[in-house]
Structures are given as C-alpha cells and as structure tokens.
Image (tube, rainbow, N blue to C red; front, side, top):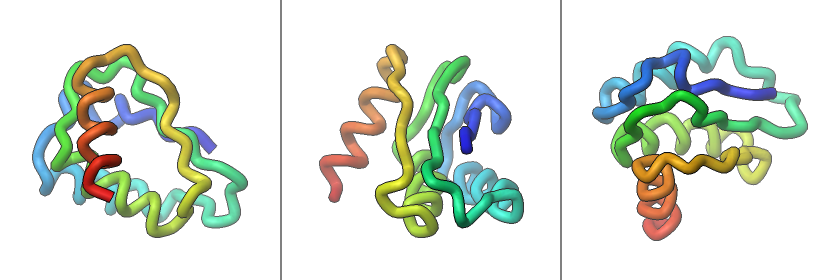
Length: 87
C-alpha cells in the first residue's frame, strides 16, 4: 500500500493538521498490508510536528512495515532525521 502525502497538501505543517490527516486516512487503511510506503513526491515542505502526528500513528498500526520512500527534498530529509534522532 502506498500513501501519497501530496493528497493532504503540498505544505504539511502543524501538529493539528498532521493529526487531522491521520484521522482522515485511518478508516481507509488496510491493517493487513505487508508494507506501507510513504511517498513524498510533490511535497514542498514537511514539518517535524506534522510528521510526528501522522507517522507515529502509522507506526503504531504497522510498526516496521512503514517504509519511507527516498526524497531529495531538504525539509523531508531534515524532518525524518529529527524524528529518527528522537527515538
């Protein structure tokens, strides 16, 4: 299963928006999926607060089955590094 983040907007900032995005997608998720790929294509900006709300929700359901697809976007790279360092 692939989740295209651009469906939630191109500028993904704020904790409330990330929480709302996860709540919106939650009913559509297949809990039996072998893997969940997070696609950052088209994203202009991603903040750690938005990502924390959305990705932690995904990880609580799928654990290590969540795969973050590669991105050249500096804000995506920095956000993923910040979240990884917090663990």
